[in-house]
Amino acid sequence: MFDKFKGVAALGQLATKIPEIQKAAKEIKLELKDIKVAAESGGGAVRVWVSGELKIQKVEFSNQFIVNSEHKNMAESLVCEAVNLAIENAKRAAANCAEQKIKSLNLPIDSSEILSKFGIGSGVSM
Image (cartoon, rainbow, N blue to C red):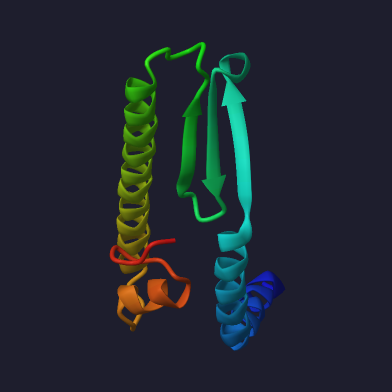
């Protein structure tokens, strides 16, 4: 019986922390811009650099992997563009999924308003 009260109290406490959560979300977004990570496969045949915002910064193929430099540059650019587009499509799909879940809760507030508080939405990039 008291577990229900604990849940309500936790929800009330969470509601009072929304401004802090929003501030932290903005800070995280700023910090993600500065994060850069890299990975390689094929013993260094392919290297990829990604930002903390999940944007592909650079794709690089080793000269041993692709001999023709004209094709190499084009392939690197096309792979980078395709991966970024796929990530954007995945973000939109995730936002739509979250929006449907929020709507199913039948809360007395617009679901897009709730999602925007956390930087999620069909038109918002994460």
